Image (cartoon, rainbow, N blue to C red):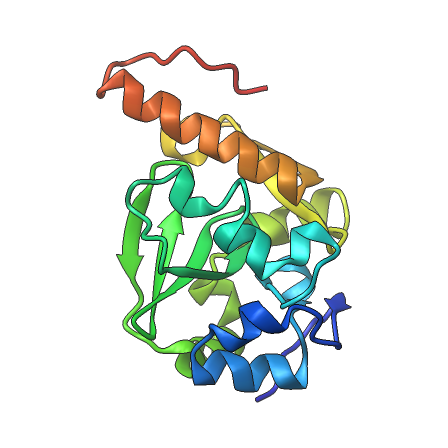
Length: 198
């Protein structure tokens, strides 16, 4: 399987316990390359490593900020193997890939397994991975570092014009999206939420 635009890769499997808990397709991939940032930041597939923390699959799956601890829609058995350039998450649920839209907590079934997810990503990364914000950012400001994601102000779910994009650390963006999601849930559909979107 070919993957383009690699800006980071982690070769050695360090976290054997997490690796042993994964389904076969993901194991086969990680045995070849232990996680990768591809398409110049359009897709990050986490690895079985202890550091860096932003790349650790175990941190995202069972750590203190594991996604299922912040999003009730996510099960503790869902494997958060990857994310797109904005911090929306790709998870394996019973060998099927689902996408978590991290601003709102909505889930989308992509109707592919991990192998076909990789294939579709390579065939059409722009549309399948939603890379339009990344291309816009690259034209205006340059490339992302491997440990960075894009932050939209105001968030895309507000459907406001004039969205500004900035590069922030993955940890910062994921924490921001989780907080935003909780404030939106708390608002119960009100026109305003008590949240700063700087």
